[in-house]
Image (cartoon, rainbow, N blue to C red; front, side, top):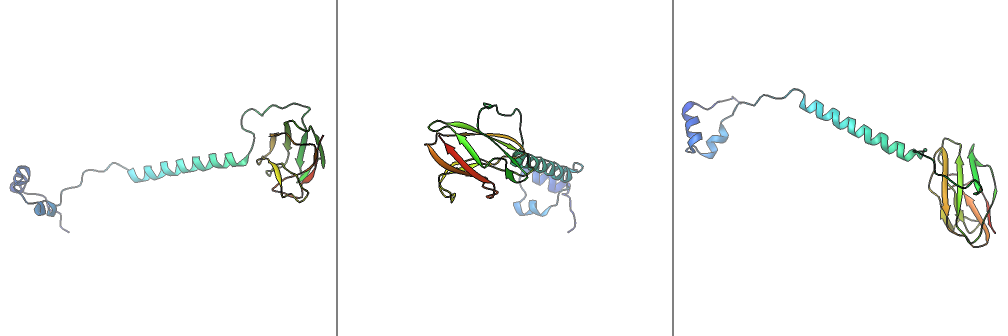
Length: 165
């Protein structure tokens, strides 16, 4: 298409409104000067923002220690996950009162501790969230006296017995 600019007569007609709408659309006006690199700058900033969001999401999912570790009673029941195994296969906990269960994860993979009322691990009474490398303190509600079973839900071979007395 040939670029046309309005003549003096057409310009006057446009200013005074005596020119039809179709004629105004037919005239190609010169493009205003463009700012340098607007599209590239926008794409780069979007990629940078997307990368930052992704990095934060990955850091949040890693489950690593963030900030100050949670404090706990040194007499709380404790279990260590290392080399895809728990260091204990039996835990003793107080019955009829809530307690803190401390997980020390020394593996690079995430683990958790869930407590079940049956050996088949079908009736969950407590489900701990995943924990990355570091210390995780679970606050378990009061359990009635009896024998329970715990396991890492990610690695079902990591399991043991929990006795509430």
